[in-house]
Image (cartoon, rainbow, N blue to C red; front, side):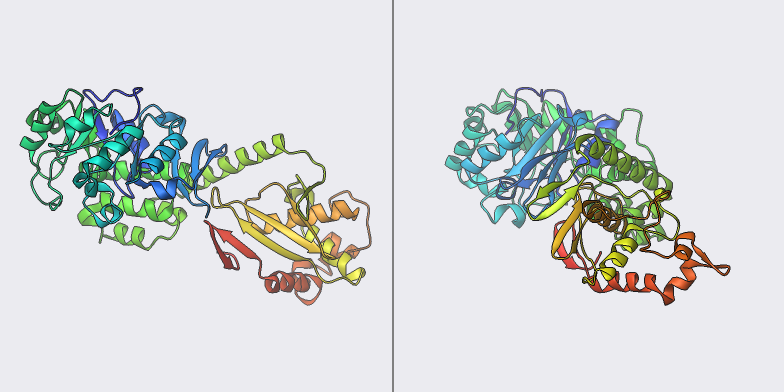
Length: 477
């Protein structure tokens, strides 16, 4: 079952693989509380084999990104020597391809042959593999592997490092008692480490119970699923922490590593358990974003500070890596520029100057198309003027700033003033508008009757295409 010799599976306690739970925030939390090894959720080979390995310098992670821009697996340096990648597979060639894709970023590979759910078995994966010893041997020989009493010796010969045994039959579910005697029989049948799993229901409630489960099964090691999902501090020898504290620490990791909001919500609801219908539980269930969830837990300041830190890091990386000169990207002229609001008078923006210039030249008004990057939710906009396209190669924190940056690129390429403070008056915008006041009334007030109304109208009618989390929709999400 295991694919690397880097990691020892003797006398360890592990976070078991759990779908929707075993993502990076939960894995890091388990390590904080004392887990020796952490498993990711089961990831299907046919999806993983299509992924591209991407170094995410902003989050300081390694992401495996699907063609639709979804991050299928995210990991970081902190867990590199402790994380086990679990895949669902029934094909030796695909299994090997996935193992080679992730091998530099994980400590071991695990092939799931224990899951009885249709999610795994319908493709001949999970527990379905147990009825096909030849396929087990083929998969094992190409990557490394796992499970069950009549097969363990054959599996051991393939060269696996350890075998984890969930002590239930295929037709049984978590509500059924775990069969410690069967796990013990497996442990006695082979010489490699056996990891006992399945004790969360009636045997493992606290950290002190882990050793008792180990003794009852006669195994080298123990892995925990639901007990850890409900309260990850089960791994700490100092005793369990209040679940409220655990949820807060989990949420901080989810924010720091831009975890999918619905995944974050699912994990928190599992921790709430019978309190899921409490006022807090209902607020979590109603949340649509990590910002909403942060508000439910009173972590708005932490959320905002984290976003600002990531934005600062993103800007620094972009500034250091991209020159401030025009570059053609297909049919789009690009420059590495950012929109700095403080460089412009209160009532003046590059978009305003570009619109006024287009009117003066009797051109169609500028059209903006904006996309949002799922990786970090940053924005990039392309503006079309006189059938030519312009954009900044840098990503901005908001759709409005991305459009302004695109306008700057266009203005600079065309040699047109952009309205910056200290810039000589170009005549494109009247003096009163540049000064921002008219007869004691702010320009913002009178703009509704004049050119700014046109600008707002142009923004509303252009209906930019926005890509959010890999999905394309009309308008901004």
